[in-house]
Amino acid sequence: MSSTSQKHKEFVAEPMGEKLVNALAGIGEVLGKRLEEKGFDKAYVVLGQFLVLKKDEELFRDWLKDTCGANVKQQGDCYGCLREWCDSFL
Amino acid sequence: MPVFVEDPAQFSKPRLKSELIAHNVTLPAVESKKQVYVELYLKHIVQKSAADFSSDEEDDDVVEVQDSQDFEEEKDPEMLDPSVLTDEELKTTLLKYGVEAGPIVATTRSIYERKLQRLLKPAQPRQNGGTGDADQYSDSEGDEESVSQQGSPETVSLMEENLHVDIRFESRIPLSSSGPEIKRGNNRSNNQGPRPRPYWQEVATVDKYTMTNRSLFVTPKTSLFKRQIKEPVTDVLMEMFPETEPTPTGIAATRRRPIKGAAGRPVQFKYPDLPASPMTLQRWAVEHRLVPLWVQILVFFIVACLLYLIYAAMEDSLANPFVTLLDNLSMETETEGLSLQAEP
Image: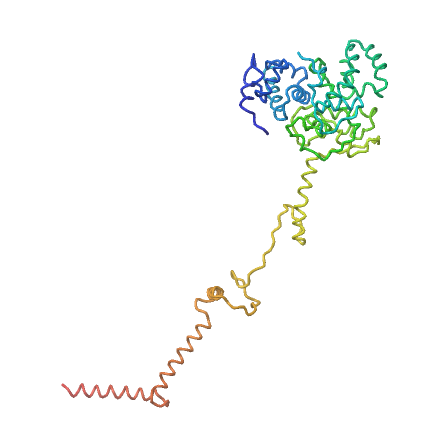
């Protein structure tokens, strides 16, 4: 239904390595900063949280909203991005 | 890694609200700022949970502390206040509701607590069930009262596990009507087609104190809404054309009254004496003959009259004019012949 953004495509194309959280789809400057303040400074840390929540969409969305105040679209983008990355590389 | 639980200022407003409700604290006015909620939260809750939280390593201690401190405030100690539960208890409680919880660590604890609270929430009747999908896609965090009550359905509805809650709920909470009928597989597709509503939205439609095990058909509010929109449209059409039979496609062509005399239609019933416009005259002309009949007859009569007048203008009598003409002609030829013979 919704097409994936350029950011999404770039992120899922390769292992995330040491990419920053800003590289995640749906996470821009503001949200990235908030995440970093909470200690999620790298994308893999957010991935860690995603995995700890057992890749559950609702929980991850809740967590994202709670942590950095992402709106529904941003939550969805981030979740989709991580999930697809996991499908390819995990 | 930051610890989420201890910092109420970090909580979202609905979280604070739900915490206050869980502790039977009266809520401030709806429009009040988050700070008010934080203060109330700090006032009422922190003092209680501080003691409990410090001893969350052992189950026994927690139970004792619960009994001593929470006895007055909580009727069902474990049900209303997930924050006093240990990780293990929280996990088992969630499992009771059919939620397969992952590891409950610092970062995930608050999430699972909130989830448990959402699961406990159906005790409150939903007042704004009519907000429907409108709130789901609102970006604002502060304006999430209805969303929180509906349990942020855009996320919950995608979670099929919530529906499993109904199965376990029967023994605990009177709402059970939406029980085992709504079973879904564990496919985590984002398919929002039949849009499963959170079960607690169904409270509005079901008397919460009836322990009926009848299946409750989950009619997504979106389709209801759309149906309501569509209905007036069809009614208008039916009003306008009441005698049209409903066709399968819904399209009915209305017959236009045929224009008499046009496009080859026979003029059976003459129009009343309307002043015939030149256009109609011409149209009639084209329709019948190149030259209309009456014009032909008129011309004929005119010509006949002219000839008669010419004839009448002659002074000769009417008696047998042809004979006289022939005589004249024969006489002329004779004279010519004689003249020709005479000359040479």
